[in-house]
Amino acid sequence: NKHYKIAVLAGDGIGPEVMTEAEKVLQVVADKFQFGLTLTPALVGGAAIDATGEPLPAATLELCKQSDAILFGSVGGPKWTGLAPDKQPERGSLLPLRKTFDLFCNLRPGQIYPAFADLSPLHPRVSSLGMDVLCVRELTGGIYFGEKGRSDTDAFDTQRYSVREIERIAKVAFEAAQKRSNKVTSIDKANVLQTSILWRETVERVAKHYPGVTLEHMYIDNAAMQLIRSPQQFDVLLCDNLFGDILSDEIAAIAGSLGLLPSASLNGKGFGLYEPAGGSAPDIAGKGIANPIAQILSAALMLRYSFGEEDAARAIEQAVQHCLAQHIVTRDINPKSTYGTAAVGAAIVATLRQEQN
Ligand code: NAD
Ligand code: IPM
Ligand code: MN
View 1 (cartoon, protein in one colour):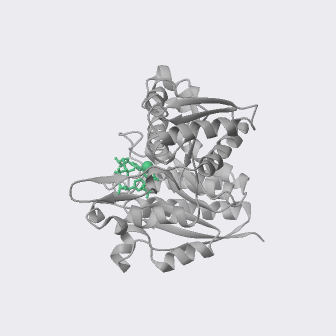
View 2 (tube, helix red, strand yellow):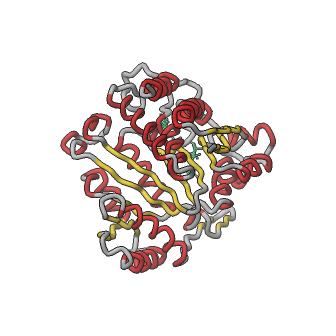
View 3 (tube, protein in one colour):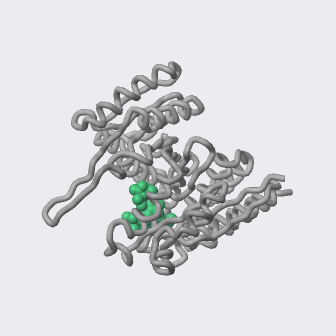
């Protein structure tokens, strides 16, 4: 019988609150679709620093290596920002995990469903046209991982990209577009940056292998603007590490909230880390009001991309949509809502159970 081992790294802030709901959802679909799950928690980020002095303890890394996938919450918060850069939760745990497991491909899908376009903060004139984009973000290169340095009086970060790094993420974008609407918009700053010129040339070359897919190039500043003006023009957005980080938060906001956007970070061989696009939300942590949907949808992406459990993934996505349609949402989406994290999680669980029959 199928059985999956999952390392559960809830982390800091709202991480543990939303992870609890995702774990409940996973247990329900495991019953329903008849597969086994072992969910093993481990310390990461600030929580791990507090307990062990290290943001990514050896035991946590070992568990990840022994697991079939990593379900990640979020790390960081004001308590740890004073630490040395490499000891901080983000740079000391999340980035090393991405690098260690070669998770070069980050997928962040964002939608405005026409039926509930009112979730979007965009004007109805725009939101009623819908949005269905997939942000394909390069995740192990670029300025995040280039040479860095600082003295008292200056500091630098380096952006480097190799043809190989650009090619492998571009292929993912074109293959994704073939299963969607056959359009790739590649985001760059080729009017200024050398890395962007190489990015453009390389993407052009990869595109020749996908004649059915339309390729368009767009500067990052224009793309940030176009997403607000007419998000329905986009299908797949191909981005480097930094531009993808920024545009994915924008996509989340357009869809309704950062609390809705899941993400899959993949190595191209089935292994992945699955986490909300948003962070530990220190401003609302501990209040029981965080939106658990990004975490729950991240679990669905894990079922799809690491385990091939497409039916279970889709069932979760449908249950989420059912709750959104009934306006069972947290306050990040509707400030007047009285539903908290647990209530939204429970509604999704109940929807999945009802469909059991
Ligand atoms: P953030 O994403 O944590 O929060 C930005 C805003 O979005 C806040 O107002 C927050 O309340 C809201 N928000 C985010 N997720 C939400 C949810 N599920 N439900 C309701 N509202 C939600 O970004 P930030 O405040 O810039 O960063 C806070 C900390 O999180 C920092 O330490 C940052 O480095 C870290 N961070 C971690 C990850 C990660 O672990 N994957 C991702 C992004 C940021
Ligand atoms: C994200 C986050 C991370 C990133 C941070 C926490 C390092 O913002 O996953 O979007 O910049 O990649
Ligand atoms: Mn981000």
